[in-house]
Amino acid sequence: MMRIGKTLAAAGAALLLFGAVPTEVFAQDGKSAGDIMVRGRIIGLLPDEDSTVSVIGGDVDASNAYTGEVDFTYFFTDNIAAELIAATTKHKMQVDNSSSGNVGLGNVWLLPPTLTLQYHFMPKQAFSPYIGAGATYAVFYNKDVPSTLRSVDYDNAWGVALQAGFDYKLAGNWYFNADVKKIFLNTDVTVVTNTGTVINADVDLDPWVVGVGVGYKF
Image (cartoon, rainbow, N blue to C red; front, side, top):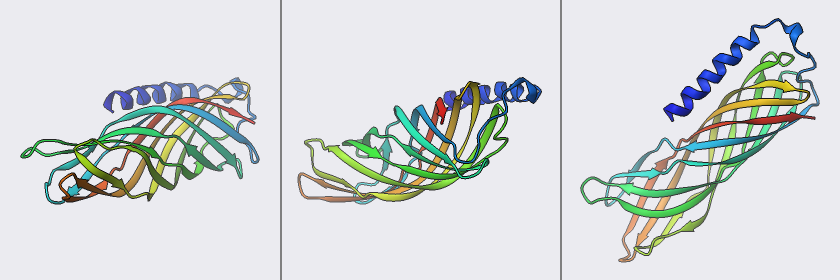
């Protein structure tokens, strides 16, 4: 996470220097009301977990995941836009317990479509940062339950998303994009062992979603 953060910070600093170049150097069409932007990103979904686990205690751990993401942005005005983000990731889940050892919960896929309302600063400039906030609905599916357990169930859940990023005009209608989201997401997990013991976990996944990619404006 620190390595990704440093890379994005360095890229942002470099592009801030470009932003200091006189605006006459760049085409000024920029972002406008009615525009649609389609982006493709490579993202890292990095859970920042906090949990309580009944019966056995310990903490739920979800692995980091990396995948592709696609998003669609529509500009209501030059500055205000809505963005719909779609991606799916696979995570290895386990309960970390120092006294009784780790308990593997198998793998689960996460589909969290997210809709944010954004404000784009300097939409006519080559370097245009933005901030956003919105909602996500997390769907857990395609579970791979280990043979040591009878079942593992995750509750689908609503969450809140905060967002910051920037677009940088490359050529024509093409843009470079870097984006960071913080998603506040809680799910209840129910585990049934082969002996019939029921273990309940209240899990705050609260992932960071860090991505870079390119976009095309229509």
